[in-house]
Image (cartoon, rainbow, N blue to C red; front, side, top):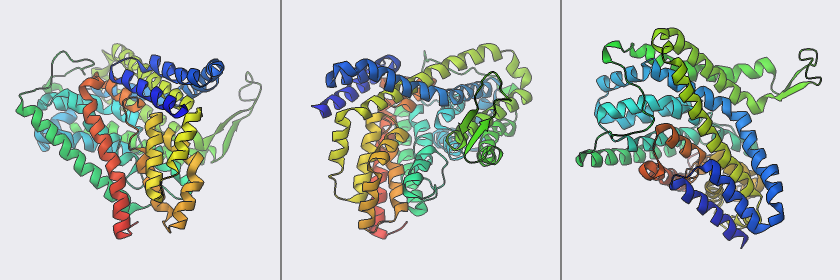
Length: 467
């Protein structure tokens, strides 16, 4: 019965998200309904002690990233940089390769260390203009952004700084470069199959005479082509964000130390007690925030006359979008925390341990928990906290290197995580002004491709022994 309760809560939230209802409202309803069916007296304590704690903790840590990412994307749009990049891409690459262009831009930013949430905000104005000029239906855009930002550069490509590739290293004593051969093969599989699918969808829509679309929501503003800035200037802020993020990731631990940094009371006399921060837990967030601020400043300085007239209204809409996106994701995070605490979730973990093959066991376990919680990093963290010793024991018994286990677990976290209730999916659709009904089909196709890639990599390892 406890397992059925967990599945029912998940199914209800997925249905609500797919039908377009607010996840901010329905995530706590779904979570607390599951608690009510488990133990009615625990509803209020769970809401305050788990759901709200998880939700507020997420906002505390990540809202500045959402906010700065939204503002960065907006000033890129207002400056005309997105249209300049599109014009150059069409001139040098061609309208027929719009999907490949979007995937490449998203992949470069994500592999450069920019948060996938930030990539959504930054790339959307650019993608919308490219799709509009190319006559490709806007509803296909989320699938391309998902392929570029939510897949191979998130957890497959060796060395990616995304958190999904970093978390396993703490459990398996590996590095982000674990199993480079398998990671590269998996990345190429995802990229090749994903682009083939997106091109098939584009050609099918064009064959039916479907264009970009009318009566669309959250459309970027357009500039005249005569006033467009040089494309090298337009792409400079994107490059700066990636470079600054990489540099700050290295420099911040040098400035503050790798452990805990404490501000003494005499610096902040109104606080009365020392203020401490654990640097290693926030260095990635601080790096992205600093990089985004640098990118925003560069755009404003180089396109001041174009930005200033619409800066006030533009940033207001960006702030509103950041609030909605961050609260959607935070509510999902709270839902995952509650579900992970229920007896039914323990049943799920026990059932997953019965899978005999070590790599398949790890892949199914992590992917399932990521799907249930709607979070790649959240599901993987829960799975590894509860089952990492089991995974390691089985892998060592089968003489499987832990580097291979790292890569399989990382890729599996990005498998079924992008179900309809996933925070990144909801953010992507909110930013692009589309609905699950219009665009989730293509996101789900990318989800299936990512999941297949995990088992493809496992098969390649057993067939060749490549690491």
